[in-house]
Structure formats: structure tokens, C-alpha cells
Image (cartoon, rainbow, N blue to C red):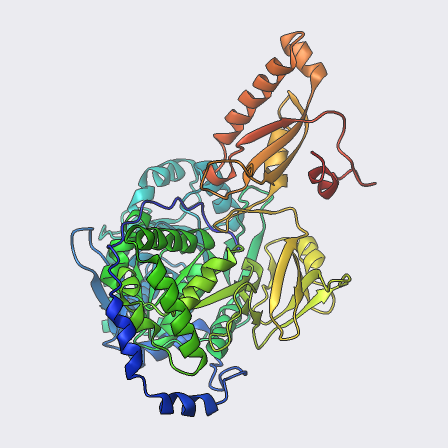
Length: 619
């Protein structure tokens, strides 16, 4: 599952005091209660009251009705002001009003609409309105260069774009160059409809007036669970990227799947820090809490993550490994600096022993750590890429339930998840209750390609039946491209990838072929191979990120023709200069950071494809 390149800022936490007298509190424990708790059998099976929703609209309307005065979305008007709370009643009214206006005023029923911008209330309202009956939503990465954004617009055949104010300059260029777009709708704007422009707030007000007049046809639209409703483009966003087609059933089954393994309550609050254009955040970080009557607090940006956590006081965070590892590192640095690491380690041992005996006092003992994270945190979910196991173990040791999810955009996204009642740090979780996951042609270690059959599985790739047939076999199993094994308890462990995709530390997918196609068009380059190189072991850099590397065979004849006889160093410099020019066309996370000049030819298959696995084993 790809996510945008996250640069983690400096995080400031309070000094840890960790009073020594907390040990005395252990003497007050009622050991008779401990013995009784030990008699209770631990849960081994999914929750019996899991949900069985068929569409997003079903649980949206249910939650609006059941929790009208409950907090739904929390957003800061600006950094200096406190979080503003939007209730379920307000959210519900805005969604129905926007949907009404989009259909009755702008005539967008059944059409494709791009949603692009940073996380904000208008994004949530727009996406939910689309899922509840407007047309096909196309969530789009706000970090895309203009040329890639135009390509997404063309490929999706979008009729309208809902955008944030920060995208205004790019939208102006699109207006000039793409006359087929019917409407440009700006979030946080009350601009009246003028030619092709409109403000989202104005449309909501128009919709409310239409509903007041007695027109509630949008609310009554019945959703076909199998109808194509969402188009997610994979991280590669040129003409060779894949568009993943999803329906309401795919998303609803994600909610049902999570409800069998993890309990969320109306009092829960999720902290939204990941981009909403990604299926991981928009489904599990948005739709799931809506289905549970929980609330969502929007992070202003990574540089505000600590003060936002402390103000919003979330109970759950959905994130990627890089952010979890950074939180872990910064908190432990503060503990060591406060000279409290020994007592923390002692109390971890003591509280682990007590928990094993049936009593959990971790939140009380490690209160200062919890306070740095808002005070109420109980769940952290990490997905999209592997995480250092010691981080997950540490979180469990201080009492935070650490869960991992596994899936792809193609599985909308969840296909496996750690049950909160029986965690297994280091695994990618267990297959969701509706899914059948197996290993194809396992080797002597039980490892093979992970195959997935699930109601969360996509409808197929957009306008690409051939690629769809390649990844979904006749029995309905999706070939994930991931290598792994399943243990005797059903936990899945991912050990490698058979696909060529490069996965960054924070979960962004990079498709090598996409960049290679651009490089191979350069006169001075005969052939290229892109791969992620591990950092040097002796490197002083704290980052563990793979280095995007181009292994290149120069076109020596062409170079001599253009420049005359050159030294190896001069040839290297020319090729590197050309690569830097290519980097300007690419999103930052795809930029090539290293160049290797290859001697001789690449090893290839009979169909002239580079044998990547052999090339990567060469020094």
C-alpha cells in the first residue's frame, strides 16, 4: 500500500519524571482478583457481533441517526485556535446537501469527480457525498506534478475537480488547457457559481435550500453494492500506472472485517495524519470511525503532530512505520536524557509479569509517556511497510495495543489484520474473516507468493482487462506479488517481494519500469534498471531509507557522436546531468539519488526482460 514521502520533523516531548514511589503502589494489588482473572479463558476467536454492512451509505445514515450530537470531525480553523468540533448531525446535513447540489444544480450524477487537496473537512464531505450516490470518486495525490495530475484527469475522464485552495495555481493552468472539465469546485469557499467555478460552501447552502423545499431525492438514492464507485490510481501515475476500480461492497467489507478483530466505540477518537487520497487512510482512517460513531481529529501537519496529539487526545492512530519509529525514538531519547531508563525498564518487567497474571496497570505506571501522546492512546496501527519489531514490542510493553494491517489498494485495502485480543508483533496479522489467504507453491520454509481471495478485492484494473487477468486467477485469487508464509496459528509473515516495486520506509510504492521508460528515451542512455539500494552499513545517516539507484548502460556511440572522445568520469557526469533533468519531472520520492555505470549487458530472459534478481545479486 503506497503513501507519500513523509519527512518527520523534530518532536518535542516533556521531561520524564517517573516517580520511584510508583513501586509502592504494587503492594496494594488485590491478588485474589488476579487469581480469579486467571481462571478466565482468553479470547481466541473473532467478535461474534461483527457488522454486516453492504454499502457505505448504510452505515453513514445509521451513525448520523444514532449519534446526532456526537463529535464527528475535529478541525483547527488555524494553528492558534482550538479544535472546532463538527457533530454527526452537521456532517450528515452537509453531505446530503452537497450531494443534492452536485446532482440537481451541477448535473454531475454518474460522473467522475477528482478530489484533491490536504486533509480537511471539505475532503471528507466531498468523498462521502460521492459514495452516497453522486458518481465515481477519484481521490488524487496532492503532491503530483502538474503533468501527472493532467494525466490522471485525462485517464479518468473527470467531469469536475474538487480542490483545496493551495492547489489554486495549478487549477488555473488546468482550466486553460483542459476545456472539457465542467466544474472546478473550491473547498472552504462560498464563491457563487460563475461559469465553471463554484465554492463548496456555496453548493452546500444551495443543497440545504433544495432539501428544505421538499426535495430529498439524494438521500433516497439506493446504492448498488457492486457498482463502480471509486477509482484509485496506484503510486505510479504516468500512462503506465494502474487504476484500481472499487465498489461500495469492497469498502463496506473492510469495515465488517475490522469489526471482527478490533472494537471501536463512539468514545474513540482517531488521529488523521496520513493523506486521504490513499485507500488506507480514506477507508480505515475515515470510513471505519464513521461506521462506529467515533470521531476523527485532523492533524494540521507533521510539524504540529505533538501539540495536536496533546490537544486532540486521540485513542487510536493509523500510521506508517517511519512515524511510529520516530515517536518511539524521540520518547526514549527523552527518557534516557531524564535518566529514567532504568526505572522504565524495571517497570516494564514488573507490569508484564502482572499482566501475565491477569492485571494490567500499565496506563497508570506509564502515565507520563501517555500524557506526551495525549493521555488516551490505546491503539496504534502500522501498515504499508515493514516495521522494526522492537518498536512494536516496546509499545506493547508500555500498554499500547500495537496492530499491523496487510493489504494493497487492490484489496481496498485490508486483507489481513492483527486481532487486538491476540496480538503477534512482527506478523502482518491474520486473514480477515471473509478472506481466504494461502501461499502459492511454498518452498521448504513454507514461503511462497501470497494469494488472496476476499470480498474486499477490487473489481479490476481500470480499462485494463489484460492486467486484471494477470493478477486474478480463474479461481478468484489475487496474486499479491508478496512473498511470505503463514504459521500454524494463521499469522502471516511477509519476507520479501516478487514484484519489482520498491517500497519506501514510509510505505510509498515506486514502480521501476515507469522511471526506466523515461531514462531509456535519453540519447545518452542505452538501457537502465532502477532499484532501491540499502544504505551503507557505516553510514552516519539516521535514515534507513532505500536509495533510489539507476544502474545504467551508456550509449557510448551516441555519446562519442555528440561529445567526442570522453573519459569515464566525463561520461558519468553527462549521464548524471541527464538524470537530474529527469528528476525534475518526478515526484520527490521517486527522484534518483545514485548512479551506477554498468559494464557489459544486463542478463535477460528469452523475452528480453532484465533478470532483476540476478542483477541485484551482483556487486
